[in-house]
Image 1 (cartoon, rainbow, N blue to C red):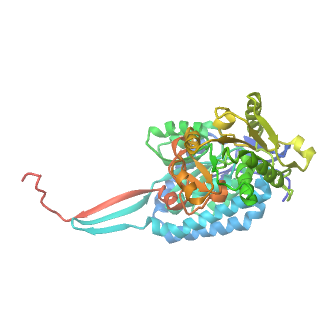
Image 2 (cartoon, one colour):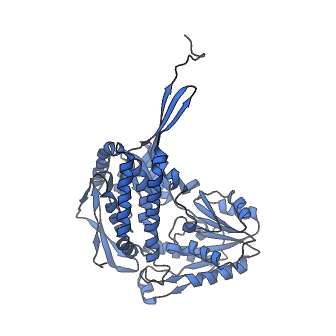
Image 3 (spheres, one colour):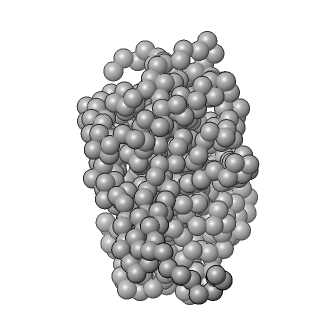
Length: 492
């Protein structure tokens, strides 16, 4: 792939919209390098995209489901064919190692294929004959869907919305993040080319574009992945026209290690390390705070450090030996470092993990050595807040009631994990306030696209993936065909 800057544009009604104003996306491993440019679209551009989607909706909603599936399957094959180019571009603009960028495309197409395989069954009419007549429940598309998604997994977090929305007969306007806009824009263009003009549209831009995409009366549904504070603004913006919402938000996901957990299980320790630091810890569903029973705590920490030092190798995303690349952007790097400094000021012990393979590159990019934080109070920000970076606190607990209280004492509830004897772990899992709890694994290693995913409390509204992820984009329409009976409580 050439190192020449990539230029992407808005996509409206099947055509690229070229704008004079644009922004550059830097390489986080080498911030002096501009990987490419995205457009700075206006609120008026957003209106054009929404109008195009609204105009395309009636015909697309009436398109037979078999044709919708066939078009999506062709789009999947195009994504697979373009995977090498998309992978390299994504690594360069995002900072994630090649293996993680490749994995993102694999998960994306896996979900799209699953959605294609299930959508006919999910949206077919339900017909019931009963003693009052006949009832038909149809599953109708909602209309125009806005999809807004972040930078950490841009391709998978866009396709998780595209596949169910379009397959069920909706049209879309998508908005990527300026922190990783290039590869996902190329992916969306590939997908959109398989559908009629106006079915899939895309705009970039700043807050005014987001306001239009969440308040315009022609928008029927908003699918958003991102921060909880942004979601609060979206809910307010959507309130005037009572839009449907799917919100997959932040999490401060806890991992509980029960007293019977085998600290000498090297494979389990490796799974934990990966669940802490994959993608540099920049995943909503990663294990962000670890609670270990005091009876095994000291040995656990020793074995954890051993496992981390084996797996963690920091450097260029294009180095095949590297497991962790740079943090995506300067602001996020600053935030995570501030959390660590705050913990140190409170008396915490801070231990760097793994190896830095390329010291010169490390100094010039947004790199940070993954960090273990010990002896930290539960009220410290590094425990109470979502780090979204390569740092993790490990804390001891004394009994089950205490740890469940500590875990649930959070505004978040996205995922969690419990590690120990299976039945015991399941009993503990049932008491955790979370959308998903994994047993003896965590993060992406416990994700299955066949089942619903989402959060409770301030970690979200609604579910993605699985059958629920398809049903989230349809309205249930009940058609009653009654037998006319005299009702005794209605007078003649």
